[in-house]
Structure formats: structure tokens, C-alpha cells
Length: 427
Image (cartoon, rainbow, N blue to C red; front, side, top):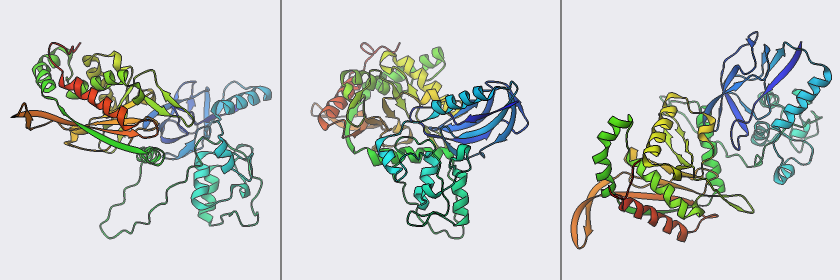
């Protein structure tokens, strides 16, 4: 019987690592090909990792809540159909090629003096945090590769090889490295605790949120602007339709669906905002895929409404309801989170009237839709009570300037203010 290795797959765009949130098997279990092995959290969603083989689980290489880089071994399986040595070698080579991430010029420089040595994001992160010279570490992984466990043992022992120390531990071995891992890690604050303080462990999902937000703020020069919109016509139309709509369709016709539709329409006219920064170029996306922020008690998810500009208000309302249900039931999949080109956040659902969102990396902008508030305004030299809402836009100033963003917001404002029974189809 042959032994095969299951590796951490890449389950989403730009994903470099995943966290084993729950094992669904144990050593000794028999699995068939495509049976789920573990629940893995990556890019803020849980996804099941299927087995690539039929056989017996021999060893779990990672603990629950442990984070591994894409391509690192998660478990070993004794397969039922033995392969020749040449077949096994070909399979291993094929798996390594599949999961190997491209090496950037910056990363190659960061890995010097050993230009051939390549390390996983988890390994490189630990080495940077503790000042470990990886060229002086002997790994215990496949072909002598350095693993996260190797560095944790060194940290626990206190015997850390530094760059200016003689080599006590040598023969560094290569391992895969993902793009952008040469980014400096943030220092951890030494927070004093007192009697009665409660320490809450940081979950994998909270770590993912923190990492993405930090990446956005470190790399994107944020700017901010806001417009005030008279949403009275929209409120009137929606309130007149909501009861019949709910009875007919079985889900709510929300204000948010009108805003998402207005944004999608405006993006067709101002495609500059549907863009992403890519170093030497700006990529203007053809599809308009609106990411929407959906919060739970302890986390924030950003599922995507694909091709929102092609959908009716009813279609958008249905997708909002379906995606929110998936989030709350824990059934959101990785593909539900992928492909977003612009984000709309319904901060008004929490009573917010003004806020500055952090851009959903690598998008170029995020729009915060605030609470609709009744208040007096001046219309034709007369005071009237109107339903007013603030729309707050955070923008990537590398990609966008105030002029185009101002025109975009003005167009969204115009669409909302001109909503009426006669010119705004729901279906």
C-alpha cells in the first residue's frame, strides 16, 4: 500500500494559508475519494477539504485551529491501490507544482542570503517575529523542509539562531513562499491585565479580518467623501410595495436593494470606480460584482452579488436575502466571497449616520449607506420634512481622484432621488 500526502489547497483568490477549524476524520478512519476531511477557514469562510484518495487516514499533521500555508501537508493517507515508485514521484511532483506559489522579486530579496531558499508564509512570519535566521535552521518536514512546528520548538527552547550568530543548526531546506509575505508584521502590544479582566482568544476568523484590514490600511492611501441624498421618493415607493412584495415573493423588499441597484447602474457609467490597483497598471473590471457586508455577532463577511448591473431590484433583494441566510447559517462558501469589484456596506442598519469604511482589498472603493433619517430641509424656500440619507465613499487615491468620485456620487444621488413608481421597475 502506498502513502499519499494531502496538502492545504488554495481555496480562494489570493489565499496563501488556511486554518483547520475542525477535523472530520481521525487516524484509522477509512475514506473514499472526495470524502470531506476537514473544515478549513480561509478568507473568512469555512470550506470542506475533500480527500484526493481512497484509503486509511494514517496521521493528522495539524491540530485544530492551526494555520498552515497553501501546499503544507495536512494529513497522510495509506491508499488502497499501490503505485510504483515512479508513479508516486510523479504524483508528488504534480502536487507540488499545483500548489507552488509564484515568487516575487521582493520576496527573493527578502529570502537572501540564501536566494534558493523558499519558505511558507507561516514560517517566514514566525522567523520575522522572533528574529530567527532560517538559513541556520534544520527542518523536519519533507525533504528537510522547515515547518511551523520546527520554529515553535525553537521558540519554546529559547535557542534561537540569530543572523549574527555562528551556525549551530544548518542545512536550511527550501519550502514554498507566497507573494507579499515580506510585509513587516505589526508589533504586538504588551497589554497589562488586572483582576477581573477577561482575555478572549483571537479566533481564526478574527485573525483573517484583522489581516485583511491591516493590509488595506497599510497599502491603500484612503481618501473620503460624502453626499447627502433625499430618499423620500424611494422610501414612499418601497413602503407602498413591501407588504404585497413579501406576500408574493416570500422575502423582504429592503431599502438596501434600491441602493445596490443604484450603485451598480452608476458603475456602468463610471467604470473607473470598478477598478483595482496592480502595481504598474490599473485593472478596470468588466463585470460589476457588488460585495455586500454582512455582520454576525463576532465577525464580518463580504459575499458577492455577481453581475449586479444585470439584475432587477427584485433579483438583488433575493440575493441579499439568500447571502445573508448563508452567513447566519454558516453555509457561506468560498465561491460566494470571490470576484467582488466594489463594496456597498449597509452601516445604516446599525443606526450609523456617518462613517468611513476601510476599503475591501484589492478593490478601489467602498460605499457606506447610512441610516435614513427624517428631518427638516429647505425646498423652494420652504421647510419640509424629508427622508434624508448620507452616502459615504472611501476611495483608493492611487486609482481614483475626487473629480470622478464626486461625479459618481452625484449620479447615485440623482438615481435615488428620481425613484418613482413610473420610472423605477422592481421586476
